[in-house]
Length: 414
Image (cartoon, rainbow, N blue to C red; front, side):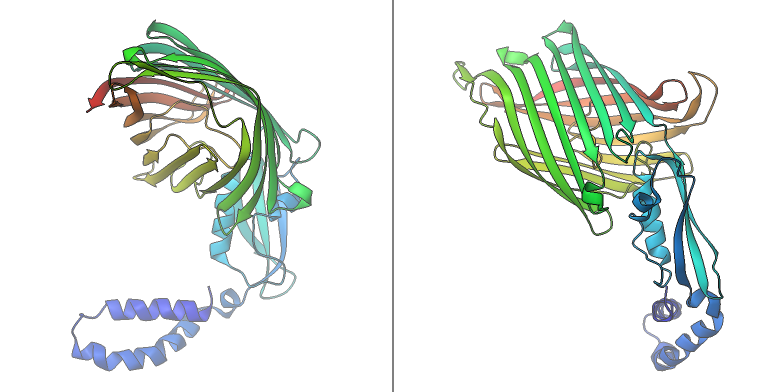
């Protein structure tokens, strides 16, 4: 922070200490404008006010290149020290799944007024496991959802990541709700050796059958490939441009119209096409955020997806979060658990323990919310109020696990 910024801050503080309508204030304003900078210059040590970055160094990075880590800190040797940018870089690095923890501190340089910026990281396991299981009662259907992910970092000796996602849905009672989804994905976070560009490519398969109330249903069988190039912008944002093509695409939707007659749609209209995406991530942790926000959006010729979450800390162990459109994914990955279209959640920290294969950290959460399904029959709009309750744990033996229950009650809007 330079002298001018600090002077403005002190001057503002001085003004606020006076009544809004005050003769004293009108007299002191010109005086303070002259004297506050001098006071600040006297109060601020010359060493702190003129620090120059001599070098940026990394510590604790066994498999991650220091050039990759330094790319998230927008400060170069020879630049004046910017403590705000250091805090931003810590958030950017903490949001990555590559690191379990991140700290940035200063060390003495080779001469007076010069400092070393040290980025110390604790790397996550090279092979990461995630598991999610939920029992859901929605739209007169009771079913079990199981999802898993295996990801390997530095798959090709670089920062490249390969991950396999698998999801299975098994019906228990009521209307049929079953299916399977899988995705094999490759990510290059430093495309062409640049920290500004990244690449995501994958192949996905989906086979689902969902029966809704009033004899409505969706049946899908799709196999698709996709490729997207992204660019990081500003402090936390990024944009993507991609192409999707479905090699197999069979989709049938049935519903009753306003007169009770069946209508069938067998033309998906989205077998291939370009897409654009925009997002940001200012959360301080990829799995257990205590502050910040995350947006993930994608727009194509015949679809649009927007997911947003904002988190506030309300104490050392508790947070609030608001979600819109469902749980947003990160820059590279989709979220693994099911969610509601809109929810307001409360999360509470679980202390580390030796139970359940060793708990590194965790939390339990409660999320009341609402989901909208549109016009399913007879021209009526259908939605449901629901409640999601779960526990999320980072374990030593099983990796990241999430167990939850969603129960809801349907409501018709005429």
